[in-house]
Image (tube, rainbow, N blue to C red):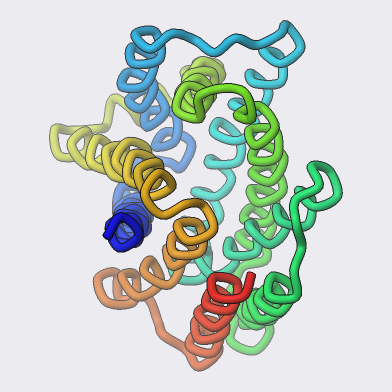
Length: 286
């Protein structure tokens, strides 16, 4: 019963993360990706930091605190910003498919740096997802539908996320994952202060609806998504919960086609199918 509950929670996390992506695209019609990311980090840290202080900060060495700060800035301030820029250019459906390469890259780096296992199932799933990414990226050659500037933004985000995830994986071995994530978001928000002169005019343009939309994006993507995923890990374990949450790109793509009226081309359909197959292979045999 607990495994079923864990799967339901993992699917819930994937759903709210996908919904946050679609709502982010809507929000960026009025404000820049940078503004959305910084304001979202401020809201997220206002939730996490008091809880971290209540629970008590993790016991880390001076060097580990430095790494924690860097991972927060790299993973949240920069990587999330770059991904939002790419998504704003490419659209949710295409950016979501391209970003599925991130966990694959993380698996390989984690294997060689942290000794994490690399199985035949992971390799087979990674191959299917890689083909899907190549198909999506090549769509612009014949249709003009994909901007290479957007592709570069998304891949830069994935490289930075991979670094941040590997560092976080290393740090949480002896600490609370919740505290580590909360502090990383907090340090990401602190770095966002540097961008206040750039986002000032955008923030002034936000009306009540705009603030409400950013709050909902933060609630779904940063708070509820992380909470559901943490519970899913508790009830089902990472071997089940993580592959299930990899359904986020598929959900986001379908939502974008349905609600944002993004075009569903043959290449995008093939990429979505291959991504689904890759996720299933990793989940079942990875």
